[in-house]
Image (cartoon, rainbow, N blue to C red; front, side, top):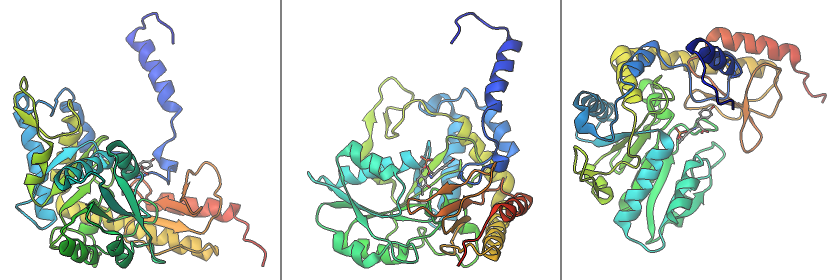
Length: 369
Ligand code: 0PR
């Protein structure tokens, strides 16, 4: 890197060139992030210098944070639920393992996650010296509750179910898991990083929220289907007391104790999440999600018309198919089993799906039988 200073014009010319090297969302079919809603971008720039790590200095920003928690408490059907904002799914999952490990107090703690769990649990277990037990998924790509029950022992501090799995878009049988954790007195965490902004807005969706007695915490990410800016996550808990185990003294801040993992943390992306929630409301998210699901169905139908089989009918807007390659410039991803995976985010509009299908149809040579 050169060390001489630049004029503002030179600087932005270079920055724009760098940004031009990035791929554009218009051809990205692999991401769970998307272009933020315009009100999110505007709100983000207004709150750029706010720091929720010292909330007493930013009471206005902090009140937006609190309002987000209240909104999710109502959406997830437990108005007295508590929670906190985070930087995303990874941090929320780490926080859950921190407080469940602390409250269990076991010397050899373990957790049980489905084979489909996001890799953030592996990171969290590594950091905290927790054994990660893996429950298999059945042929509908959902966690097997019977095997899960068999994996529990006295050192199990948490069971994780996923609402909207990263790879196949499936929801684990949360009511069945809740029965098991209820009997055993183990914390049940629902990782709804993706599905938490999708399932509540769909008719006949699998249930995953606090209306199921036994669901103790739920994580959900505004920077995925919430159309907020990066980084924004929310961790909801049925009983706020779980955070007490994480409190540390913060003598020179405006609050004297804190349980958050990060110190300095952005108010901007939280204000952005609040802005989209207030702007779109339940009706706006319902129509957004219904469009994404419609596009998912159209993509599956279009691929099957070419003879490419779906792997599963997903609960959320993630479509998977038997392994096939796709033409440039489309960017797709493949699951750990090698299946083609396409996430129908809001930027993957009906027109995008149709133009992908046209390009794929011209490129694809079906295998000779
Ligand atoms: N839980 C689930 C169910 C997830 O899908 C993800 C992220 C996380 C937790 C972790 O969330 P954070 O990444 O916010 O910490 N799932 C995708 C992944 O990492 C997100 C993603 C986003 C992937 C953009 C690709 C991409 O281009 O695999």
